[in-house]
Length: 387
Image (tube, rainbow, N blue to C red; front, side, top):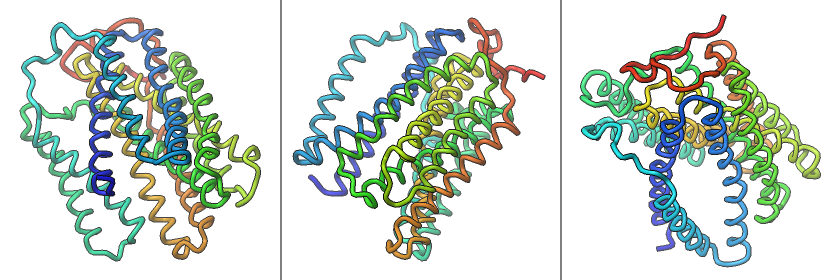
């Protein structure tokens, strides 16, 4: 069963597992903790696990892949998952009464939304390999657009209990915050991918050496997540998002201007250290803002929406960058040129995120203590922006 097909299927199942864990973890944090300093720190600590996990996650595959047979990694991860599952059962408190015990699953909405996103992502990742001369790329792109259009129509007009209530998009600031975070994570995904590829393909780093270069990601990212949880009470959301996107932009610039051969400490190290600030500022600020502006029974939806958008940005951004690389590296003859052009696209994405944040997001500093009445009502209400 060590084929690419079985590996792809099992990889998809692991993504399903993460999709179950992520929104429920965020919902648990945001429902049990009212808006205050403690919740900010809790969400910040949760956000800090991403860079720590990313750095550790690059070490173990390198360790198993370089020193033993690669499939032993998956036995190790299965054991790790079993331990985590047991800890969840023992430690995580349960709800005595579900938020919506009579709720139903919107299967049609789930199918249309998930299928549209998967097809759209597949089009861009596959086009990076085969180009746009293959007819099925266009057919699948049209199918993805039709699925997403059908999802919106179904949710607005027909769904009795929509999987995504459209009133959550009621504020222009909320919508622009989502878009800004999405394109910012597209740029960050390009940064990590091309920095790793640069060191492996152009500089000949081994897997373990490449993994070791990610250590600043854990240190800087953990610090950034905690710092962003603090500054959310002192800075308006648009500035926090802009700071994170600016860090990503500068990091992309550092990598895009590197010579092919250079010491790691000159540009790669500051790029990954500074780049670690970007996603954590964006993630923590987005989670705190989103969870603080919707009703308690929509906390899981808000967390799921943010997590889906950011993860989707990471994956889709690589498809966009791969397409640019495919058409500019002369069939793999000029790898560095293709990498640089992909990084330039990432810089453009980060720049768009900065502009969207500063021009269209207007959510004030979050200094609330406790639940507000607007969060207990039936409608999604955002706090008024400071003037």
